[in-house]
Length: 606
Image (cartoon, rainbow, N blue to C red; front, side, top):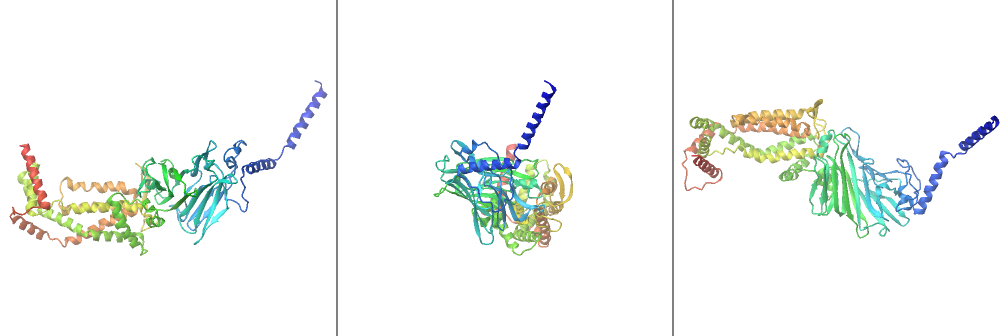
């Protein structure tokens, strides 16, 4: 190849390259061409684009799919842009996504997190709500499809109510509508699912399979404590309310009973789904990642619902606080989301403690004062038992010299005989050695009931008293690097422990306890110091007040109980001869039975 030929070819290559570069369509032209193709595919499927009357909150990048997909069932709905529609009333700000037609996020306007930030129950793509079904041999999940909203936003105030529709189109006359309805006030959001003209398209169209999942965001100061009270609750149509495990991952399938509602319950807030027509099947799951510091727990509910005579599935969402009175006002027994304890503890809190607390709450006092008043009322009600306990311990204290004398004669080498002699003394003196314990045992359910009542009490959330900034969580006056999982010291818990140790000391003086019994009482308060250190300061405050008021009661009772009179009465009792004709009942009969059993044991040993 000569030089002129080579130069000619080189010039031709430069011209061709320049032509390709300058004749290439612009990015804007390419984008416009894609939009035209997209509009054509939607028209063929019978889907109408909504008029652009306002901007959406957020627009995400379009999903690009193969043209063959557009020809399948709901194929046109696989292409779109995720946009958000805000639905709002006095209490709620809900953001609906056109992708899936679901609730993307839920914010409670009148509440803040422990760190004074907007309280958002859940937000983001970890949260789903969609129908699962088969159409034309294809498995459909509506979470992956794009809905068309009937409006760009919905704001309802005062006594008004309004609705907004998210439509998933199959054809112009065949579609699924999510009709969201909202009142101007309240924590409920209505959702009616309306499949129209799809009975021949969707397999098993008589029922609807819903998959609902949420990753609940941290709201409180202590995520460990928040997780302790967070799980899935559910109620069946027999009015039975139960829940999955609170302290570990759990799953449960329910097919034998129809359900009325399922709730993703956090410590102080809940997301509940109420199916007025009932839920025939459900699979519930709760899990958590300890390393995750933003999400409390992940929850999922796969539900099968029936359709009413109109072919619709009416539902209600509740997004709101776990305040007992608020939940009760919603109906459907939602107040049972507040766990007041098990067995008799629940009834103590529900029918005694809570009504008294609500009555005191009407005076608009500081909650520290309300807890004080509640404790005073409780101590006054239990004062007869406290008096009997003190009197019984005083009798045992008066008898102690005689018991020591018996021990000196019998010796400690024969515990069976020693016990028999003690029982004879109790019988003659008319003293019940268990009299000091029984009143305390009777009071124990009340003490334990409060252990569940205060951590579940929404009213204490964010309420301060003295140095305690929030009575619903611990007060950390001293913080340090974690040691065995402990990173703070609660001053109120420390004061409660000290008061319990002092109470134990004076109680031993009253009862005359000796030996091991004298020191066992000191172990429990030290265990409480470790256990209750991360519990609500309101609970520790109550226990502290209870100890202080018990000191006061015993101080006043001390003036009413004269040891000399007790001793004189005991001596009079000992002089009374046993009446063989008198039928023994109560403690006397029990003493006789104990002595008889002791004698039988002694005889067998011989």
